[in-house]
Length: 392
Image (tube, rainbow, N blue to C red; front, side):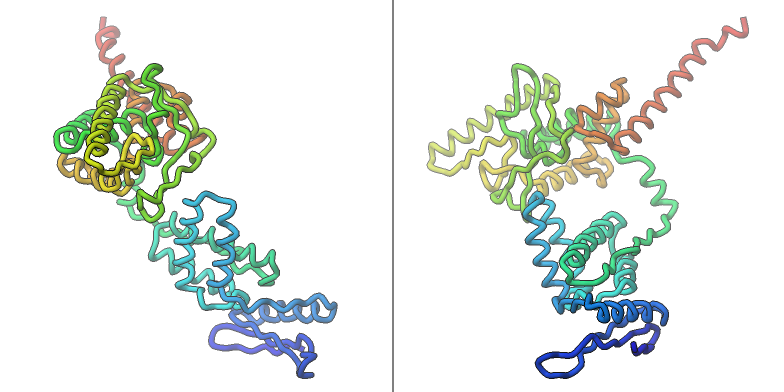
């Protein structure tokens, strides 16, 4: 018969699960953390039933941190290194709460309480990634019979009520108007290296992702056909250029060939001439330029890919000099490209194909916002044209 006990605000149970053949003493299982006596009694009855039917198995004593490390090693075999690194960072956060706990002792209430705490410290999206990581770990533990029940089941992220300012701030993704983009690019051209100007010019005029741009090699550019082939993305573990890895694109649709404005190609051609001249000079003086064929290269580690963190830093400085919104990012240039294409009358399908999107709500929101404004302007122009017709 199970022994039920209340400790503080939670209940626990203790049941006999057999006899230790080595000592002849009875073995018991104790588990707590239940919110009600009924919950504790139900699980205790389930354990006793399994013992009676010879279906009970003893859960492992492995800790969360130990099992999570084993899980990550297995998980890393089937995903991109960037995805594996992201999960590893989430494990670091989870270990702060569960690391020393035995997997079998982590309760649903404990896990939900932790989720609630995380919601106070991190953004909704970050907590979502942490939660999905934990779900993967505990699901695997259940499949391996390390635990009987998955404590993450039925737990959910409690979304904070947004302030008016937050709602207004996220109504529309941030991007530059045409005049702002012109000022931004002019600032970079006047105050930064030519390579920086070409990179931001390319981002703004193609809408490619920053990882796609830093992965570009000269072989990807056809100056004759005026196209660029996007077949890969660049990942820098720990932001180290010399550790670069070229990965497959984000989605199938991300692999694409895009037409490029002639003026952009002219700047790219000038940049290539500058790069070739630099390589020749370095080789002449015995300096090392590790030529990997990249279009945009690190200033510190010559020949290696440009660091995304450096791009972000350069952009922040350029925004400051241009007196523009410093919260804009390199990805904002992708949104800017979307808005300007929509303003130019390019259809949504063509825009999504150019950006490498199969389906993207942000692109649609920007497109609908811009085209709605254009429709309103068209209506107003028509009204002005016909202003005196009815009065005739």
